[in-house]
Image: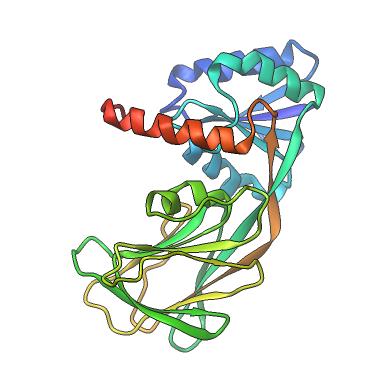
Length: 275
């Protein structure tokens, strides 16, 4: 087995965990590669938080290999491996004792008023349309499958996958979906209306966010990245992306147990003033 190691140096200080992982893999009959060509790897292991895992997926999703994360971040909803079970987890991975979860992705496109494609991006977690640095609310029209749903006024909208349902969408009051589900969620951010519910829509739906004139430029962020600047009369289109991302499930805990523990840990983490 050839394993790629993708480490976040701001989380894995001096590369200490990466060194341990690399040596353990090499000493147990497999090959570990770090900061090298990953084109022939069988698995990619990330070291950091959820953001590190998302960065690795963004860079290497085309390889169609499974990803698994070692948690050196804050809470780590997506990272499977905690440090106190590191060797046990590596043994399971090297022995092939794990399940694969196939996670849906969404495809985000920006079109100008003449229908020309300006930019596109693939998201595992979510695409967030939000107000810019100014304090003006953002005004936009939400369409699903070509039908007008509502004129939205507020701080923004989150369009998330099942994977992203435990991220920003959850913090904004959205529902939790299990990772293998293919539905999408549309969750409002501080809407200036009595309607505050999320929409859960099926995998074949197409979401459109349409703009007219705006006082300050809103932002579109796929998985925390920035896309091209929006302009008046632009249209954002979000739909299912055909390929899925494979992640490793070691079976240490079931999904609901993980969610319960991570939510509790998140509260404790911020209450104690950690960063």
